[in-house]
Image 1 (cartoon, rainbow, N blue to C red):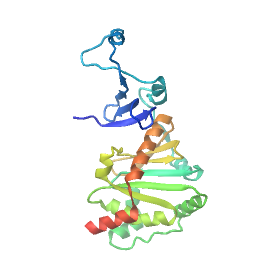
Image 2: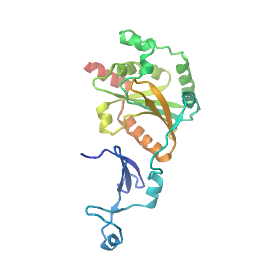
Image 3: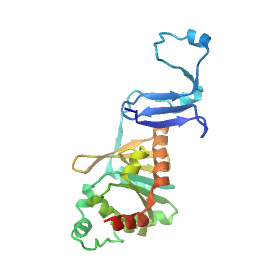
Image 4: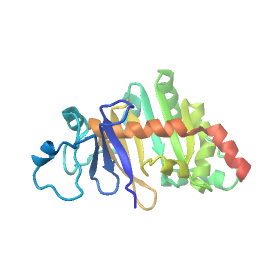
Length: 250
């Protein structure tokens, strides 16, 4: 079975090698570089096994993108500190949503009304909406890509409907079919990226309740999430267009 690989980083722009890749299942690192073929070079290598190959890459590639520790120690922050990040960031806040349901949504009256087939009745003057409008008025950007199953779950349909609330207070929402997300090898994770320098990785339990927030600031790790953002945003569809497509097939 082919490995599931994710590019960690490259020093070569878009022209090929040298590049580092991570095996998403084992954590192993694959190196792409210029092959070493000179017998004199190979003769100097130790403990060479049959089938092994050798490549040359710039030292800077390893320094810039190579793993810095064998096992990363998670840094967890409280929910209050997490909430403050939505007012203290400077430029952009970007979210990937990949789950089929969120307990925080299911516990709201708007969700219950939506499930009953009624208008959800979103309050655009609640504290969350007021804060989003205030931050958007400062020129800050809030963007999300929501991954949707085919057919969509009840929770995802609720979020498709709720995107009009997000848009009304300044957020831009796009959607992506799960099949496309898997083709792009997007991680099955929920996270926020703030100012392309800090990642808040969200943890959930089996009941779809958010249980913690892990802060990631290591540059190579942040870069990986930014690469996910770029791919997801490029292929995702604006929510109005996506919702119309779902309605036409439902």
